Image (cartoon, rainbow, N blue to C red):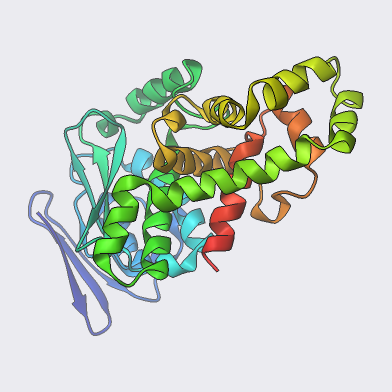
Length: 299
């Protein structure tokens, strides 16, 4: 069993199973995730850098976990207020590749890796590639971005706790998708209002490389607001259609996985719309708007 003991000059790491034992200074290379090369060091990284309390990565593939951690760190960098809100990083037998669970009266979260899948990086790569091919994960993303998805849940939980001091209210919002639905609706409404204006429609048609005004109208006029939103959410991934929680988490995976920047959200709607319909590797236009609203909620 891995144990991490905080010492005066750093962290003492011991693992009774592997016999691993090492004292790390807080000023060592643990601050640089790229230099970490063992599960024990990854555990220390999570505890020291992210404020995680419990870590169990025993038996998992070091490279698979390290590459996922590198992606997860990007969300910690962009949303620093979530440090200390991730209580545990563990693994268990389950259906999904990874999962998220709110704990401690909805104040913190736990992230789990699939115990079987993450034993072999080649296995998890193939599983995730299949998911993207059938639409179960955003186009352009890789298995490492499953960690980004779970971090999206953590960000939303932290936002709910910032908005509401009563844990019962936080739980109600979490279970019934109150706030998450508002975020998805707000993101879609901003997009819908822009693209249904006459000027915007004309701009889209002129730059659409074959997309006709009728095709635009079908999506945003004939099908209407509700159906149009459902269609755009489905374009993120089929999993995004589960509920607003998953739409937001998949948007995190989509935007980070395709290396879109928060600072560019909502700037050139027409260009984003064109990218979306030309099947580029850029994230879906609704994903960008969703993360823009999440980013605004976090301030």
